[in-house]
Length: 285
Image (cartoon, rainbow, N blue to C red; front, side):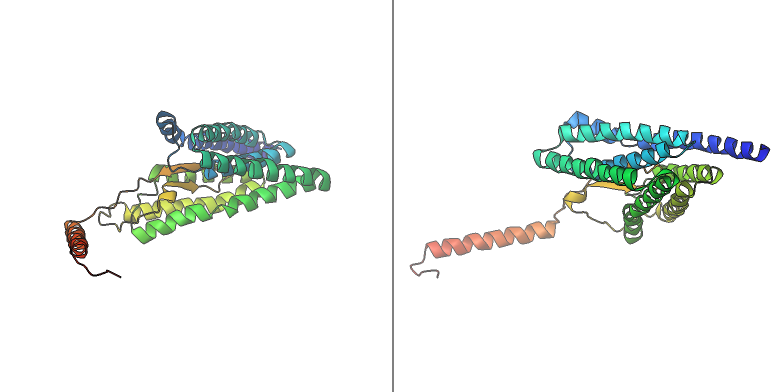
Protein backbone atom coordinates (compact mmCIF):
# COMPACT_ATOMS: atom_id res chain seq x y z
CA UNK A 1 0.00 0.00 0.00
CA UNK A 2 2.83 2.38 0.88
CA UNK A 3 4.56 1.65 -2.43
CA UNK A 4 1.34 2.34 -4.34
CA UNK A 5 0.89 5.61 -2.43
CA UNK A 6 4.46 6.64 -3.30
CA UNK A 7 3.87 5.84 -6.97
CA UNK A 8 0.67 7.91 -6.93
CA UNK A 9 2.41 10.86 -5.23
CA UNK A 10 5.25 10.84 -7.77
CA UNK A 11 2.75 10.60 -10.63
CA UNK A 12 0.84 13.61 -9.30
CA UNK A 13 4.05 15.60 -8.85
CA UNK A 14 5.31 14.92 -12.37
CA UNK A 15 1.81 15.43 -13.80
CA UNK A 16 1.51 18.87 -12.18
CA UNK A 17 4.97 19.87 -13.45
CA UNK A 18 4.04 18.54 -16.88
CA UNK A 19 0.89 20.68 -16.83
CA UNK A 20 2.85 23.83 -15.95
CA UNK A 21 5.50 23.34 -18.62
CA UNK A 22 2.97 22.31 -21.28
CA UNK A 23 0.89 25.41 -20.55
CA UNK A 24 3.97 27.55 -21.24
CA UNK A 25 4.54 25.71 -24.51
CA UNK A 26 0.89 26.05 -25.52
CA UNK A 27 1.21 29.81 -24.94
CA UNK A 28 4.35 30.08 -27.10
CA UNK A 29 2.38 31.19 -30.22
CA UNK A 30 0.88 34.19 -28.35
CA UNK A 31 3.45 36.68 -29.79
CA UNK A 32 2.66 35.38 -33.27
CA UNK A 33 -1.07 35.95 -32.84
CA UNK A 34 -0.49 39.33 -31.24
CA UNK A 35 1.43 40.21 -34.40
CA UNK A 36 -1.47 38.87 -36.50
CA UNK A 37 -3.93 40.92 -34.44
CA UNK A 38 -1.93 44.15 -34.82
CA UNK A 39 -1.38 43.71 -38.56
CA UNK A 40 -4.88 42.30 -39.11
CA UNK A 41 -3.26 39.74 -41.40
CA UNK A 42 -2.05 36.15 -41.07
CA UNK A 43 0.73 36.94 -43.57
CA UNK A 44 2.35 33.63 -44.62
CA UNK A 45 1.48 31.68 -41.48
CA UNK A 46 -0.61 28.53 -41.87
CA UNK A 47 -3.39 27.09 -39.74
CA UNK A 48 -2.18 23.49 -40.07
CA UNK A 49 -0.08 23.33 -36.86
CA UNK A 50 -2.91 24.70 -34.72
CA UNK A 51 -5.45 22.38 -36.34
CA UNK A 52 -3.18 19.40 -35.64
CA UNK A 53 -2.62 20.56 -32.06
CA UNK A 54 -6.37 20.88 -31.51
CA UNK A 55 -7.01 17.41 -32.92
CA UNK A 56 -4.27 15.96 -30.71
CA UNK A 57 -5.69 17.66 -27.61
CA UNK A 58 -9.19 16.43 -28.40
CA UNK A 59 -7.95 12.87 -28.94
CA UNK A 60 -5.93 12.81 -25.72
CA UNK A 61 -8.83 14.40 -23.84
CA UNK A 62 -11.19 11.69 -25.09
CA UNK A 63 -8.66 9.06 -23.98
CA UNK A 64 -8.28 10.69 -20.55
CA UNK A 65 -12.04 10.87 -20.04
CA UNK A 66 -12.41 7.16 -20.81
CA UNK A 67 -9.49 6.22 -18.53
CA UNK A 68 -9.84 6.26 -14.76
CA UNK A 69 -7.60 8.51 -12.66
CA UNK A 70 -6.28 10.66 -15.53
CA UNK A 71 -7.35 14.03 -14.13
CA UNK A 72 -4.03 15.72 -14.94
CA UNK A 73 -4.32 14.64 -18.57
CA UNK A 74 -7.84 16.08 -18.64
CA UNK A 75 -6.71 19.47 -17.31
CA UNK A 76 -3.86 20.05 -19.74
CA UNK A 77 -5.71 18.82 -22.81
CA UNK A 78 -8.80 20.84 -21.90
CA UNK A 79 -6.56 23.90 -21.72
CA UNK A 80 -5.03 22.92 -25.06
CA UNK A 81 -8.45 22.62 -26.70
CA UNK A 82 -9.47 26.09 -25.52
CA UNK A 83 -6.19 27.77 -26.52
CA UNK A 84 -5.94 26.12 -29.93
CA UNK A 85 -9.59 26.96 -30.67
CA UNK A 86 -8.82 30.62 -29.94
CA UNK A 87 -5.78 30.50 -32.23
CA UNK A 88 -7.77 28.95 -35.07
CA UNK A 89 -10.60 31.43 -34.61
CA UNK A 90 -8.17 34.36 -34.83
CA UNK A 91 -6.53 32.85 -37.89
CA UNK A 92 -9.88 32.48 -39.66
CA UNK A 93 -10.87 36.02 -38.67
CA UNK A 94 -7.75 37.66 -40.14
CA UNK A 95 -6.91 35.30 -43.00
CA UNK A 96 -7.42 36.07 -46.66
CA UNK A 97 -10.44 34.60 -48.42
CA UNK A 98 -8.53 31.62 -49.83
CA UNK A 99 -6.65 30.93 -46.59
CA UNK A 100 -9.88 31.22 -44.60
CA UNK A 101 -11.65 28.75 -46.88
CA UNK A 102 -8.75 26.29 -46.62
CA UNK A 103 -8.64 26.62 -42.83
CA UNK A 104 -12.38 26.01 -42.50
CA UNK A 105 -12.22 22.97 -44.80
CA UNK A 106 -9.34 21.53 -42.79
CA UNK A 107 -11.15 22.18 -39.51
CA UNK A 108 -14.32 20.48 -40.74
CA UNK A 109 -12.51 17.49 -42.21
CA UNK A 110 -10.01 16.92 -39.37
CA UNK A 111 -11.45 18.23 -36.13
CA UNK A 112 -15.10 17.57 -36.94
CA UNK A 113 -15.20 14.78 -39.51
CA UNK A 114 -12.28 12.54 -38.50
CA UNK A 115 -12.75 13.03 -34.77
CA UNK A 116 -16.48 12.29 -35.05
CA UNK A 117 -15.66 9.12 -36.98
CA UNK A 118 -13.24 8.01 -34.26
CA UNK A 119 -15.83 8.86 -31.61
CA UNK A 120 -18.58 6.82 -33.30
CA UNK A 121 -16.40 3.81 -34.15
CA UNK A 122 -14.85 3.51 -30.69
CA UNK A 123 -18.21 4.00 -29.00
CA UNK A 124 -20.04 1.28 -30.91
CA UNK A 125 -17.25 -1.17 -31.76
CA UNK A 126 -15.27 -1.16 -28.50
CA UNK A 127 -16.32 -1.34 -24.88
CA UNK A 128 -14.66 -0.82 -21.51
CA UNK A 129 -10.92 -1.44 -21.30
CA UNK A 130 -10.73 -2.37 -24.97
CA UNK A 131 -11.95 1.11 -25.93
CA UNK A 132 -9.34 2.72 -23.65
CA UNK A 133 -6.55 0.61 -25.18
CA UNK A 134 -7.68 1.36 -28.73
CA UNK A 135 -7.83 5.09 -28.00
CA UNK A 136 -4.47 5.01 -26.25
CA UNK A 137 -2.68 3.39 -29.18
CA UNK A 138 -4.40 5.75 -31.58
CA UNK A 139 -2.95 8.64 -29.56
CA UNK A 140 0.49 7.01 -29.69
CA UNK A 141 0.25 6.49 -33.46
CA UNK A 142 -0.84 10.08 -34.05
CA UNK A 143 1.89 11.48 -31.79
CA UNK A 144 4.60 9.52 -33.59
CA UNK A 145 3.18 10.35 -37.02
CA UNK A 146 3.90 14.06 -36.55
CA UNK A 147 7.63 13.44 -36.16
CA UNK A 148 8.15 14.60 -39.75
CA UNK A 149 8.06 18.32 -38.85
CA UNK A 150 10.69 18.37 -36.07
CA UNK A 151 12.87 15.98 -38.07
CA UNK A 152 12.69 18.35 -41.04
CA UNK A 153 13.92 21.16 -38.77
CA UNK A 154 16.81 18.95 -37.61
CA UNK A 155 17.68 18.14 -41.23
CA UNK A 156 17.61 21.85 -42.12
CA UNK A 157 19.94 22.71 -39.23
CA UNK A 158 22.42 20.05 -40.37
CA UNK A 159 22.18 21.16 -43.99
CA UNK A 160 22.56 24.89 -43.33
CA UNK A 161 24.79 24.58 -40.24
CA UNK A 162 22.57 27.25 -38.71
CA UNK A 163 20.21 27.12 -35.71
CA UNK A 164 18.15 30.07 -36.99
CA UNK A 165 15.12 27.83 -37.44
CA UNK A 166 15.44 26.02 -34.08
CA UNK A 167 15.09 28.23 -30.97
CA UNK A 168 16.92 26.72 -28.00
CA UNK A 169 14.40 27.78 -25.34
CA UNK A 170 11.51 25.93 -26.96
CA UNK A 171 13.62 22.83 -27.61
CA UNK A 172 14.69 22.89 -23.95
CA UNK A 173 11.16 23.23 -22.57
CA UNK A 174 9.83 20.53 -24.89
CA UNK A 175 12.57 18.18 -23.69
CA UNK A 176 11.75 18.89 -20.05
CA UNK A 177 8.07 18.41 -20.84
CA UNK A 178 8.88 15.02 -22.36
CA UNK A 179 10.71 14.01 -19.17
CA UNK A 180 7.77 15.09 -16.99
CA UNK A 181 5.16 13.25 -19.02
CA UNK A 182 7.32 10.16 -19.40
CA UNK A 183 7.73 10.00 -15.63
CA UNK A 184 3.98 10.56 -15.19
CA UNK A 185 3.20 7.70 -17.58
CA UNK A 186 5.78 5.48 -15.88
CA UNK A 187 4.40 5.98 -12.39
CA UNK A 188 0.82 5.67 -13.67
CA UNK A 189 1.88 2.49 -15.54
CA UNK A 190 0.44 3.99 -18.72
CA UNK A 191 2.55 2.90 -21.69
CA UNK A 192 0.51 5.04 -24.09
CA UNK A 193 1.59 8.19 -22.26
CA UNK A 194 5.19 7.14 -21.60
CA UNK A 195 6.08 5.75 -25.03
CA UNK A 196 5.74 8.90 -27.21
CA UNK A 197 7.77 10.87 -24.70
CA UNK A 198 10.77 8.57 -25.04
CA UNK A 199 10.93 9.58 -28.69
CA UNK A 200 10.21 13.20 -27.73
CA UNK A 201 13.10 13.22 -25.25
CA UNK A 202 15.52 11.75 -27.80
CA UNK A 203 14.47 14.33 -30.39
CA UNK A 204 14.75 17.18 -27.88
CA UNK A 205 18.26 16.10 -26.84
CA UNK A 206 19.25 15.89 -30.51
CA UNK A 207 18.00 19.43 -31.10
CA UNK A 208 19.94 20.80 -28.14
CA UNK A 209 23.07 18.92 -29.21
CA UNK A 210 22.83 20.45 -32.68
CA UNK A 211 22.30 23.86 -31.10
CA UNK A 212 25.51 23.42 -29.08
CA UNK A 213 27.41 22.43 -32.23
CA UNK A 214 26.17 25.16 -34.59
CA UNK A 215 25.26 28.06 -32.30
CA UNK A 216 28.54 29.95 -32.95
CA UNK A 217 28.61 29.19 -36.64
CA UNK A 218 28.68 32.63 -38.22
CA UNK A 219 29.38 31.40 -41.75
CA UNK A 220 26.19 29.41 -42.08
CA UNK A 221 25.01 28.45 -45.51
CA UNK A 222 21.93 30.50 -46.35
CA UNK A 223 18.92 28.29 -46.93
CA UNK A 224 16.30 30.33 -48.76
CA UNK A 225 12.81 28.99 -48.34
CA UNK A 226 9.95 29.42 -50.76
CA UNK A 227 7.47 32.09 -49.76
CA UNK A 228 4.75 29.54 -48.89
CA UNK A 229 7.09 28.09 -46.24
CA UNK A 230 7.62 31.41 -44.50
CA UNK A 231 5.37 30.42 -41.62
CA UNK A 232 7.36 27.46 -40.38
CA UNK A 233 6.33 25.24 -37.50
CA UNK A 234 7.88 22.88 -35.05
CA UNK A 235 5.69 20.05 -33.91
CA UNK A 236 6.24 18.19 -30.68
CA UNK A 237 5.14 14.59 -30.44
CA UNK A 238 4.88 14.83 -26.69
CA UNK A 239 1.86 13.91 -24.65
CA UNK A 240 0.02 16.20 -24.88
CA UNK A 241 1.16 17.20 -28.34
CA UNK A 242 2.29 20.80 -28.54
CA UNK A 243 2.77 23.00 -31.55
CA UNK A 244 4.52 26.33 -31.77
CA UNK A 245 5.41 28.56 -34.70
CA UNK A 246 8.75 29.89 -35.78
CA UNK A 247 8.39 32.96 -37.95
CA UNK A 248 11.04 32.78 -40.62
CA UNK A 249 11.57 36.13 -42.24
CA UNK A 250 12.46 35.60 -45.88
CA UNK A 251 15.14 38.01 -46.99
CA UNK A 252 14.54 39.53 -50.40
CA UNK A 253 16.94 38.60 -53.16
CA UNK A 254 19.83 41.08 -53.18
CA UNK A 255 20.98 41.94 -56.68
CA UNK A 256 24.71 42.51 -56.93
CA UNK A 257 26.30 45.41 -58.79
CA UNK A 258 27.53 43.01 -61.48
CA UNK A 259 24.00 41.70 -62.00
CA UNK A 260 22.66 45.26 -62.24
CA UNK A 261 25.36 46.17 -64.76
CA UNK A 262 24.53 43.10 -66.86
CA UNK A 263 20.82 43.93 -66.72
CA UNK A 264 21.48 47.53 -67.72
CA UNK A 265 23.72 46.45 -70.60
CA UNK A 266 21.12 43.94 -71.74
CA UNK A 267 18.41 46.58 -71.51
CA UNK A 268 20.49 49.10 -73.46
CA UNK A 269 21.24 46.49 -76.11
CA UNK A 270 17.56 45.68 -76.37
CA UNK A 271 16.69 49.34 -76.78
CA UNK A 272 19.34 49.74 -79.52
CA UNK A 273 17.96 46.72 -81.36
CA UNK A 274 14.46 48.15 -81.21
CA UNK A 275 15.64 51.52 -82.52
CA UNK A 276 17.60 49.89 -85.33
CA UNK A 277 14.52 47.91 -86.36
CA UNK A 278 12.36 51.00 -86.26
CA UNK A 279 14.78 52.84 -88.56
CA UNK A 280 15.06 49.95 -91.02
CA UNK A 281 12.84 49.25 -94.00
CA UNK A 282 13.34 45.50 -93.63
CA UNK A 283 10.78 43.28 -91.92
CA UNK A 284 12.12 41.83 -88.67
CA UNK A 285 10.45 38.47 -89.38
